Length: 414
Ligand code: GLA
Image 1 (cartoon, rainbow, N blue to C red):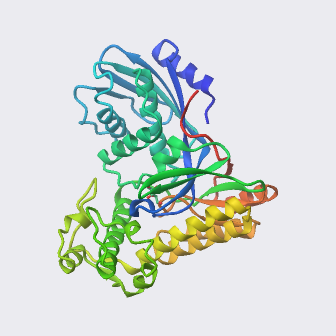
Image 2 (image 1 turned 180 degrees about the vertical axis):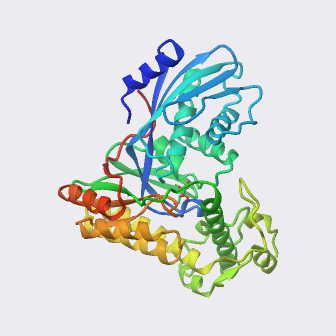
Image 3 (image 1 turned 90 degrees about the vertical axis):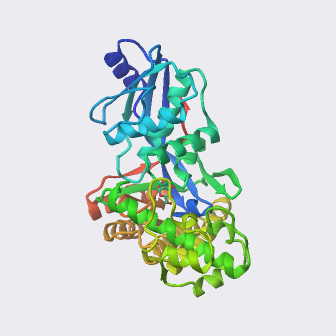
C-alpha cells in the first residue's frame, strides 16, 4: 500500500490543505471458489498488502473532484447532475455518488487517489476503488458506511456502471482481516475468518494478458452467468425444487443427487429454449445488471454446472485443509480448481496455464488462475522458502510481474 504520508502530501499539493480522512482499500486475491459467487456458492479470498490509498476532505459546494496519480483526467462531478460521465473511471465515481445520494447531499469533496495495485490485472483494482472511495467520502461526510453495508453498496455502484459482479470482491475488501482468509457464503449471506496456517505463503504472477472488464471479457463472463442459470433451472425442475427469482445453482447444490444429475444436462442450450422447457419467463435467465443477454444464443450448460458444483465442494475441502494445516492438500485443491476452470469453465488462457505450471514446478503446493480469468493473474500457495524460486519461475514464464502477497486487513481508516 502506498505510504499514507505520501498521499497526504499529494492531496495537500493539489488541494492546498491536509485531507480530513485517509483510507486504505486493498486489492483481493481469491484463493479458491472461482465463478461460484454469482451462483450463491462460497468463495475463499484474502485481501492483500497492495491497494488504493484515498485521501478526502468534505467541501461545502456539491462538487466532487477526484484527482489521482494513475488515472488520466480529473473527475469533477456535480452531485446534482450525476450520470453523464464519459471517461470510464469517472463512471465508477458517479456510481458511488448515486449510491451515496442520501448522505450529506449538499456537500461535495476533494479526493486524491494513489495505488500500487496493478490495474486490469484481476486483483480487483476496480472494487478497491469503489470500496475505498465510498468509505472515504462517507467518512468525510460524517456518516461512514462500513462492513457488509459498504460491500453491498459498492457492489450496487459497480452494477450501475454495467459491471456484472457476484459480490465476492467487495466483501473481501470490506471485511477481510490480516493473516486470515475470508470464507464468504451468499445463500444465506454469512462470512467467517479462516486463519492462514504457518508455513503458507502466497505469490501472484501476471499472465501478461490484461483482464479487462469490458468487451469480450464481459461477454464471456455474462455467458457463464447465463449458462449456470439455465443449469440451475433445469436441475431444479428435475429435482422438484421450486426456485423464485433468479435461478441459482446454490439453491440445489446441497441436494446429493445434483452432482449426478449434472451429467444429464444438455451440453449447450439457448436461454429461450430453457425458459420454454420449464415454462418460465426468459428474463429470469437473461436479465443482467448491465445487459440483456441474447436469449437465442446457445451457451454451454453441463460443463459450466460441473465446474461450479465441484468448485463449491473444493471450497469446503480447502477451508478444512487450512484448519488442519494440510498445506499439500490445500495446494492440490488449487490445482484441481485450475484444471476445472481450464477444462470445464474455459476461462483460462495458455499464459495462465503456463505460469501456474511454472510455479508448481518451482516448488509451490498448488497454483491456479485467480479472479475471472481470460488473462490477469495466477496465485500460488507455497512454502516460505520457495517464494523466491516461485517468483523467478513465474517471471521467466511470462515476463512478470510476480510478487509475494500477505493476507491483510480489509478497508481501513489510516
Ligand atoms: C470477478 C467478479 C467476482 C467473481 C469472479 C470470479 O472478479 O467480480 O464477483 O465472480 O470474477 O470468481
